[in-house]
Length: 382
Image (cartoon, rainbow, N blue to C red):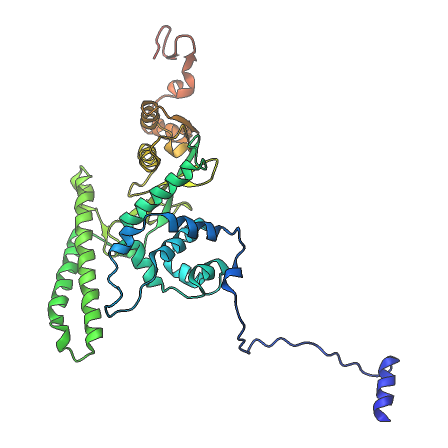
């Protein structure tokens, strides 16, 4: 009777209402079937990349594998998979081995490639480092296939440079004496380690420590070599004394970055086909500016695809007399903005004590004679 009265009261809106809600339980564990083939659509780009890599000549990658049938050892990841992972990641602008390994844990495209397995980031990083030359050759072959199919025309190529932060801090840059002291200490530490098998620590830990010290010693040697190159490029003795190199990333250089700050960086040069938006050339330099990087970029594109671009589109940082002359010689049309130098010119003129009457704007250009008339007097021209 009481239940019926309570129910009737709720229906009439006279009593309290308790809403039954479906709660979300995020603490539970679910086991559900997954059909890997249906993780991505039939026309998904990842399938095209897998098929394309499978048609390439991967013999250089397989030749170095020591894990074979009939011999003890763990099976290795198929190079076709590792190459496909890197190519698909590059397509999305991902260049970190750690990030690719993380994406393999949840991203459908990466899960489809790996069959729901997770590839360790060490494996991805080591593969990219150990097979650099073979991967470069594969990159060229892929571009050749795309060019053959008419996807790359090289009618117009966009080129620009960008500064990429190096794996080094400002404090890792040292002068020659400091690097030599660090190298001496590293050698002493390696010698003190002795035989790793005689250590009280486990053999594995001892060997790891010794390997880390040897790697540090090698980096310091490379830093001293880089420092010698920097000193050789400087003419004044005072500038040579100020030369520094990084003990952690020897090839890095201090450069002006996008937001106006200076830091250890590399100058990455990228050329892209304007029609297909496909990268046709990539270069990494130690040059602090882009001024002299266009000619090498054209040479890279020609080496990759067997022909030069018809047009190169650049910004003001790559437009200068040397570049214009180089492009004219190579018969490549150069499209670029002229650098704005008015502020710099005025500052230099003021420092040199040039009168306002002889500033660049005071010179009149004669189109017919293709010359400038000097404001200093009648008949004077340049």
